[in-house]
Image (cartoon, rainbow, N blue to C red; front, side):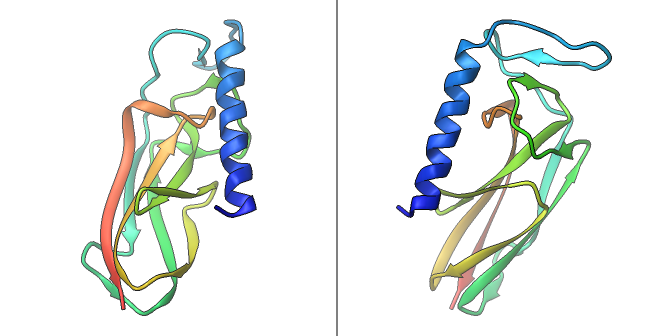
Length: 143
């Protein structure tokens, strides 16, 4: 595991730990859900993968991921106050979290030859999934 990936996992664990310790609170003017206790919120977001397309065969090297998110906005900051239309993306290649991004276009560096399963999930500001999960998947091949 690379140092960058290890740091991302540690950061996500810290955020989730902070979420568990936070007391209930709210802000005025928007629908905010506290994550200190209770069920996970649902999201207004809908997610689809534009590229790579299912079954697409790509040359070896970098793969460009393009997704479409509707009904929600990607935000950069992490927070324990969850809003149904705000979050960021987790990119999972072959069951490994490879990046957490705030962009609908991401370069997947140096993808090895073979068949791959790519999942992208729109997650809440606390890095945990909405309920139900907002996730899209595709499989593609690199030769």
